[in-house]
Image 1 (cartoon, rainbow, N blue to C red):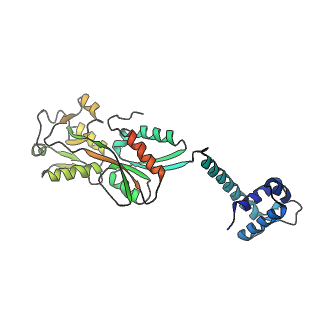
Image 2 (image 1 turned 60 degrees about the vertical axis):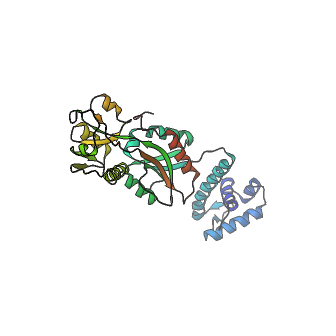
Image 3 (image 1 turned 180 degrees about the vertical axis):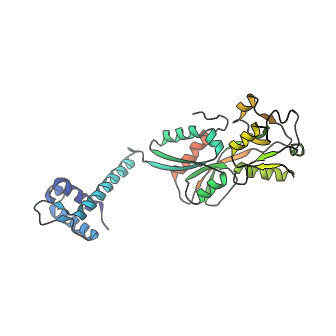
Length: 299
């Protein structure tokens, strides 16, 4: 093994030209510097200096090792600055979110993360809850924000909020204002998300618990696709009330009251707890503070 003192000796000899000057720079003796270089040469397996020259000239192997030595010394300085609180380290965050988060509070989340961690590099993946959860399990994502539909003993779950969905459809499709039973609702084509959607899983379980028989189902994973189909009058679907209120106000969609109402769906942040990280816990806390499905695409 080699040490940082050996690496420092190599660096300063290369910078100052002689073993003697390097020794003076490092406040040690020339014999100590020579010993460190001999030890480093043993690790490298080849001479690092051409000793046929009067000056300390690096061999090809020495040049290669010098480049690595410079990187190590820069890293050493960054570690020391971190200890002294003078530097915020660069971080990478692989973040997985669903369509609904992307449509609503993602800009506020990104802004808050960058304010807390100015050097953070964020890679955002928008996908279905099941796919995001699988990628978290495979360690291809660091943290995901999805409906609480899955669990694992190695995954930390942080509650964010509950999101309320309501049945919606085109005003041209359904004109009544009274509450509908699930049986009456089943007379229409019901647009649902599939089992890769966390919300779809929640609603499917709820419908089953209510004993609902829905002979006219149309399944589509995409929230935006379901929205478009509902606006076009091709069926009734469940949508986040706060997020799509503007479409109701514009007369493109109508809220369809039902008895019973749809359950509120809990949203969570999830990350591995078998790899402890204060950074991930902090990201989840920031998500708690910024999570708001009621404001569409507002920074």
